[in-house]
Length: 225
Image 1: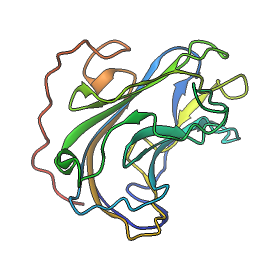
Image 2: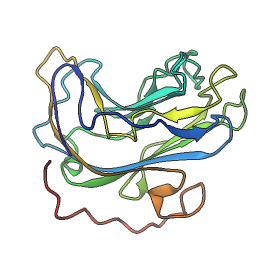
Image 3: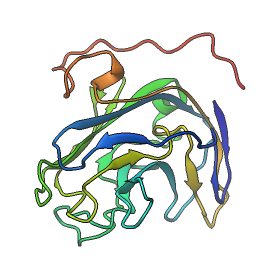
């Protein structure tokens, strides 16, 4: 899938549709894994200011507020935003939207992102309504990068039940919010999405296997549609 990101707000990629994907309660201590392949054009420009790409949305079935969270990535990493019940060390209660796991998505300073790479985001749910033990992790080509976000509460009694993935998976229907005062945007290619309770969709168990891991091969024979 090819998406052309503009210097404005707007959806890109696949249209949403079909049923919401239930993931159970937000306080059952289980993991959710999002996996996709991506390459970013060498000419992609993030711009300046609070530029970001909303990558997915988790909500309750009735779509009432508070939302559970919206994951996103920026030039400097991934994070969770629109998380009205989040508690995270060093942040006030509410929208803990600063990037939580660092990774350089700037093609100018990290040429690796201009090649096909496999990305996996893991969200570990908290183990009780009041527990502050949720986690957020990022793996690139099978290797964990950055420092995971830990010691976090994502939901409370108002929104820990009936979690649903609303956009299919991360990256399947991104919403770009560059809104940069300088020219920004460009092309991103994505492929091979999965959304599962097992790491990489091929390993059993609720947590990723111990390193070392085999580095996956880039997909071949892709065509634009």
